[in-house]
Length: 209
Image (cartoon, rainbow, N blue to C red; front, side, top):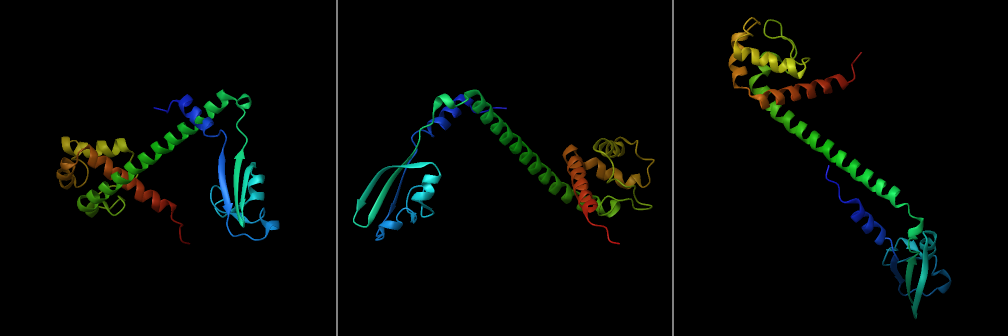
């Protein structure tokens, strides 16, 4: 897995925490007694936080500019004390988060691939297979055995048997052979994934009494 160099990222995260500064203001406020409790505009206040709120969040007033009824506050947070930072622990935490993100990305990629395979398998199955094998690949008496419970190895082997002739002792094999002959590995895998998907959905449906 190709992770961002932890020390480069570590340096960025730490330096971005140094001397945090923001500027909040209030225009045309005539009541000096309420200026610290009213929501300020701009900066990290953004109309949602008052000076009291910012102080609770660890911000300190670095400078105040008052022009008539207009107030400007320069707020700062204490710089990070490098001596109190466990660099190794922070590095491990960053790497762990990156690994988790990479795993989530891999899972999403696999799910996207599975969905695409299922869609392709559905199109093939409905056109070529559903008439003889049923909507869900269930057993149809006199026409086919159930194929929706086979594992991938048996599913593939069964289709390949029709191609090489060893499957001609199974029911209406002469009807199946031409279809088996046009299925490549992708078709087989896609149809298998599709059958697994629709049968899993059926299993999760609540059974009626």
